[in-house]
Image 1: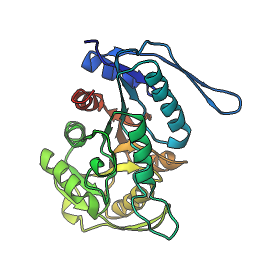
Image 2 (image 1 turned 60 degrees about the vertical axis):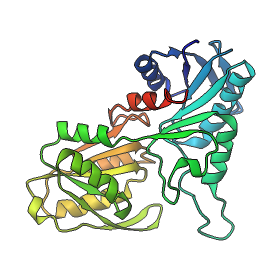
Image 3 (image 1 turned 120 degrees about the vertical axis):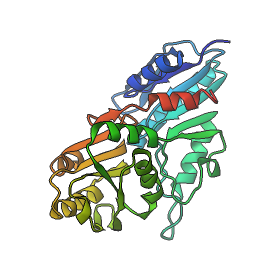
Length: 294
């Protein structure tokens, strides 16, 4: 039986190469470009006939990426691939998981249906599950989630002196508490009120007994950065000179990263979404999970 073939979509070539090396899989080549009218061109430059194929595509900024991804999967199936899986470290369209206002679409469900129709399996990292307990509630294909907790904990323990971990809201307490327990560090949880995509206020708990620690704000996704900026402002007002930030998915919309750099001494993220802040490699986590179902 031939080895699985892993192919990186544009922008994902480095992660695909890391996965191939870690799992001793073959690395395939995709040619892709945009026509002048914006349409996508794809060509599989590696033979996929009779092979199990894993496409690697993190889905930040999903709308420009997703159609090309679907075309690539369809081309692989037409050319005889036996199974086609998706390794998507950041999985988009998890936010809208209910109808909040009359007339809205539940896009998390719609997106899951499309992905399930195009792929035979899915592997992702720390999906933003809120009202769903697992991906299996909305995906009809095998869908597995890797967890970055241990990788984040190890990095913080090795690189930050006397950390105190700060969770962004009550929903994060179980995760941040687990991180803190792994490295024997204290933690606090913010109270967050969100009035809009960029309108967020936070309340920081008493931290008077931890002025000799380094606050590390933890989040799964940093997009607008409003929560982090509001929290950092209040924490500095409590007498802390150094504040760091660690996150899983580096979305950083607009000028968020530049604004955050003015507030934090250090910003680190995993390489689930390619960004200059990437310090924590999660390729082995994804590869080992994908090996279970490829």
